[in-house]
Amino acid sequence: MTKILVVEDDPTMAEMLCYNLRRHGFAVETTSDGTLGLKKARSADITLIVLDLMLPGLDGMQISQELRRSRPDVAILMLTAKGDEKIKLQGFAAGIDDFLPKPFSMDELIARVKALLRRSRAEAIRLDAPDELIFGDLRIVPRDLLAWVAEQEVILRLKEFTLLVTLALEPGRLLSRQDIAEKVWGYGAMTDTRTIDTHVKNLRRKIETPSSFMYIETVRGVGYRFRVRPKRVA
Image (cartoon, rainbow, N blue to C red; front, side):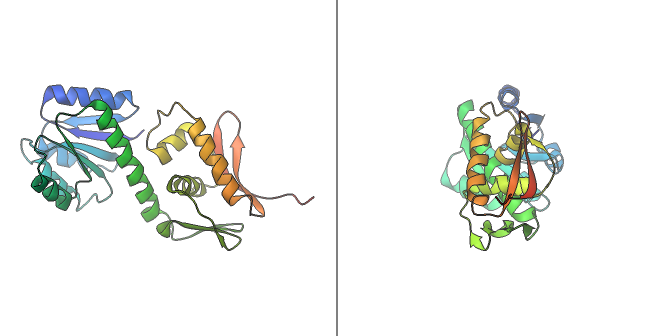
């Protein structure tokens, strides 16, 4: 489960943030102190931080600046009552990914969080995966977001590419739809699994139709696994 850290010194706001994030399937930790927030944010299991600007101890800008030295991958969404351009410019320079000015709706907060998670996961796959993955006649270069089948480049949407690499990084492992929702979409509480099935269908069409191999195996009622199988010749 994706873990989010909320650093907010207003108890009412912190409670609302935690309730709504948990309701959408996220694990949540919280603190009201900036210094403790920085310590918690350094933990490798924190994927995203919802960070208030004005905090006791270290403020949001200081936390972001310090955190980027050890956690360049973590997504940071800053909450601020100060919506002027100068604050935003300072924040982006400090490593903040997005701003949400107060007051805001919880629906907008969740939408911003999910968007940041999608971007951060695709970027993590791009940077952390091996330089090249080769299976059968499929070649994938994650860093450049490129793939080829039988030496012909295949055009994949970002989500399709992220799905392909996620499966290919663990050949033979069965991933449930919930696993895939967590790893590719950034949250496990996806109720409409047709979204995953549609992406798998499109990915199969693009990489298996021109190939001499089958790559994605369906395990009925559970999910999918990456498994290289030669096509049968009639």
